[in-house]
Image (cartoon, rainbow, N blue to C red; front, side, top):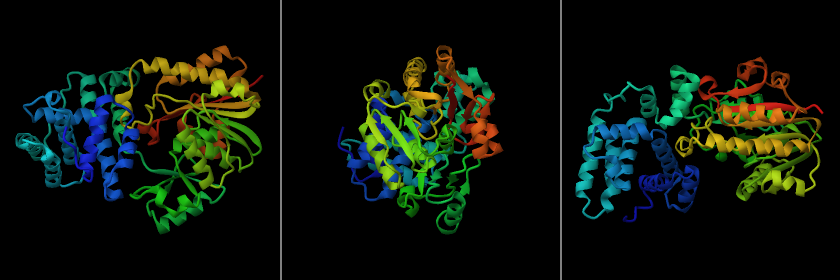
Length: 460
């Protein structure tokens, strides 16, 4: 394939889509790798690349369905470059405010480097013109089969749609699919050690984000409605006043309810979103151990602790179940297991999840999750608290893992989340509690990332 121009954001987006289509690796990783090496002129162009790539992946099936209705040529038989140029063009025409003439012209411009490309340019031009002319009267997917209909309309694999249909029924599944394609609101967490939410909210509304509003569930959360910039460019970010974190994720740490002076283990710390929140709630007094498999995540975690003015935790890279016994770790007052999962609750943030997942994941991943609970339970003090959480909506990774753990560990019991959360978050939190057992959030019900969390106490 001829080399694509490096300074054209659509050409960069095309390169990313072709790489992603070949092997379905994590989209964020490809984006980061390509953008790091790119020579795009400014941040606006880099943002456009992210918008185009995520948009095509989010609406992939429906975009392909539309193209197939206006083309006599099979998408599968087109080469990857032409196929993905068409997808980029259709996404811009149907889902963005980019003028149609610009979307058409830029799509053809990418093809200008091809030798003997006039026939291909004519084909792309004709298909995109037809779609643009009919954008307000596009064909609907046939509705004789609800699985096929929802799969095409909302761009989800059929097996995935069937899972949710069997569980939720048609009406709720459609709402959940639709919400999983929506853009998630930008939410920040206020560092209560440096500034109160009320004072910072007043400052934001006056100075930078007039539409900013308090999160209805988290007492430290602020929704940045209407904000189109980068949070990392706000002065408050560099002052260590705020972190980017969805409200549902904040609630997991409130459920853990860490106290000053305690020993806390964050078993799957990542870049430290919940770890830093733990340190803030401990008022920077106590000991935090943070584990993760990936060194680059732990480096980012350290940077976040430094930026927020927090005492750096004890950081360990490796498999926490294998490494803790070697380290002669102490017994912890509280343990947070934010377990690796299928991520079906955060598809609106990471649309590639729906294409990366396979049905067997719902067998293999719960085995790993149970291993974490089993392996870490002995490191918790008697009367200590262990919170198990995922960003999955699937029972196999949530209730069923917890039930299996409790069958083998009678020394643990579930505590009603309201005992802790109602005092911290207010009575509205009751909307998120199921059967006085579990914290559960859903994109289509609460406009939050989908999360599951349970609070386990070691009673012996």
